[in-house]
Amino acid sequence: MTSLKVLTPNKGFRRIIGVDPGLASSGWGIIEAEVQRIRYIAHGCIETKPDLPHSDRLLYIYEQFQAILEQYAPNESAMETLFFAKNVTSAIPVAEARGVLCVALAQRGLAVREYTPTVIKQSVVGRGGADKTQVQNMVRLILGLERIPKPDHAADALGAAVCSANTITPQSR
Image (cartoon, rainbow, N blue to C red; front, side):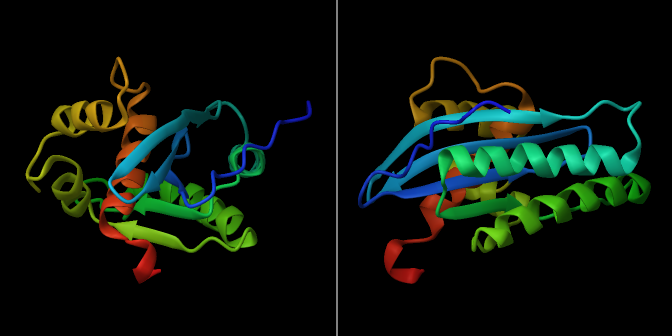
C-alpha cells in the first residue's frame, strides 16, 4: 500500500464520516462542520467482488475502511440504521459489513451515531417522507457540489454525515 497523506481536521471543526454499509458496496463520505457551516471533504465506495469468498470480502472492507480512517482522521461518525422489511436474507450480509465497519470505528474511539432513514430525510430535506432523489439533490446543494455524488451509497453516506452535523451540536457531545 502506498503512503497516504493524513488530512487532519481544521481547528474548531467536527470531521464527520458518514457510512452506508453494504457487502457489495459500502459508501462513505467525509464533511467538516462548524456552527452554520458544512464543508465537503471527500466521498467514495468500497466495492467487493462477488466471486471472492465471503470472509475475504469482509476483510477487504475492513482494510479499505481502515485506510480511509487513517487518511481523513474523522473525529465523529454517522450511519443509517438498518431496516429490512421485505428481504431479511439480504439483511445478514449488510449487517456483517456494518459490523466490520463499526469495529474499525470503535478501534479509533469513534462512537457510531445512528439515524433512522426518516430522521436523515427530515434533517437534510426538511421532510421525513422525502424520496432518495430529493435527499441526494439537497446533499449536493448543502455541500456546494456541481453534481449529485455518485455512486448512490456515497451520497447516502454524505446524507448521514450532514444529518449528524445538523442534529448534534458541539455542546451536546
